[in-house]
Image (cartoon, one colour):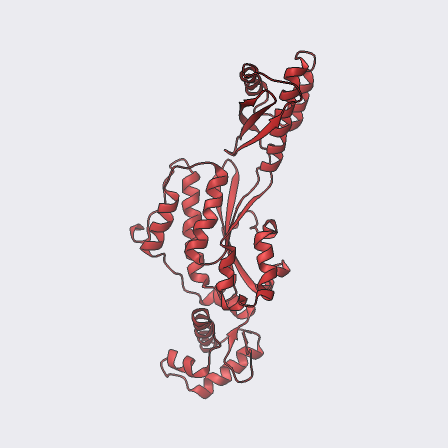
Length: 350
């Protein structure tokens, strides 16, 4: 049943007051907020109706009301007013992302840290895996006669390295030849194709060269497989403990575990969805039943996208978080774009 305009106004007052104060809202405050145009008795009747319809909850019989997940959903969908980023917030985001664009991993990890700092809640960032990752370049760095460092750059700008130990001694002079072989024949192809090419070289190379070559290719294949999976970085996990709802460590423990040890299970967006707000039970993960998630997507390029999300109590300031995430996602899209330009600040938008 459609709510009356007055009920919606009351729900809006209750929700925004509870977001600010984290305390149940009574009829006296609502009457003052509505300028005395509605009597306290009428407001109490409306509160009772909203509670019966599932939009509000009453924690204690003598207490005021708080929004239910259903109430928050109506607020987000219909009643929430759009918030503009402050100049300070825009400048802080721009400053954090205006440096030279480095490796994909470091940019994505930094994104979560910046958003967590600005939003005041835990945040996570995701670089969605690319369906077909290949190696762009190899470098082999000498360590000693029994080991070398293999450096692999993939075509999505990830750079990984690992110390590899040789079963047979290898000289510094042999490494450049191996690196040249790798860059000439083992770039831009799939892992199975790399394996086939390697087998074709079995009779052409001695064991002292074939073995380190196969080790480097095996490592590269592992990097390619890892790059095809979502890379998830979480930041500011302990910020959730400053929220009144999570002062009880027992209640916060499961959520902290998700943010720290099981972050790969955090919500992701469906393809083509720019932003989504998941409130309480709308989250499928049980650890998020008392929390809400706002997640936005950005374009990395080369048919790849990333995600940036904020995790907070159901009482979070959805309008403020959505504004910050929207600007941040647009900033990242422009960073990864050809022009490498940050979006204009709010007052610069025509």
